[in-house]
Amino acid sequence: YRCVECFRQVPKCDACMRQSHAHMPFHRVEAWSDSKESWERTTLAKLGLELHLGHGGRGCPIRIAADYRLMTIVHSRGMEAVKVGFCYCSFNGPHSEPEPQQLLRFGLFPGSWKLPMTAFTIAVLEDFKVLHEHSQVTVAAFSRYLKQSADQSEPDNVKNRAREFMTTYNEYCEIVSKGQGGIPCKFLAALRRSEQECKGDAQS
Image 1 (cartoon, one colour):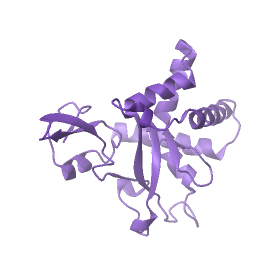
Image 2: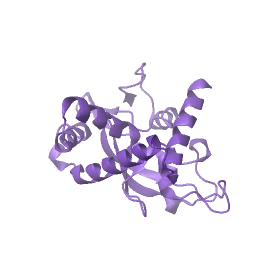
Image 3: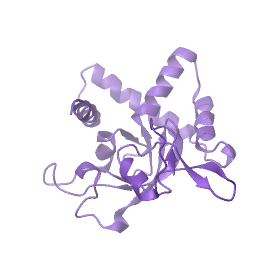
Image 4: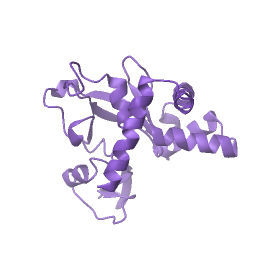
């Protein structure tokens, strides 16, 4: 396997690929096909990479394997099904942090506030915001781009997430607008915490 986005495209086994991409779960990777003698696109999720929300990227000690949830994650390179492990520790008070806040804190905007099955990276929402404001790109056109990015050979087999994207984007803009206007919002706090942690990681 090789990653086409890392600076050095050194072939690795699946275990090494998962380990080196624990904090880069949406990089594009390829698998070598002996029968076709060429590189074919795959995903880190298909290699067994699991997304852990908490404990520095490690699984929650009180969570069992059955607690993984298969979620659709929409990101700047397309969309894919990923096993997500939420944290159920009471590290944030007497109760565990609600799932939407956990997703927000790790840069994922939930598609639902009750039982999230879909999430959008903050990066993909910001990408669309810039394209929409400066190039008048529509949600429909952007969704076609995401489908094409997810499966270049058969994009029609990828589910259209345009309606969910529009709803999520509007909610995201509303929360950001509240923050700019000084209006309290518990979800905004999770977003800001995510930004602070990213800055801390960059400085360390």
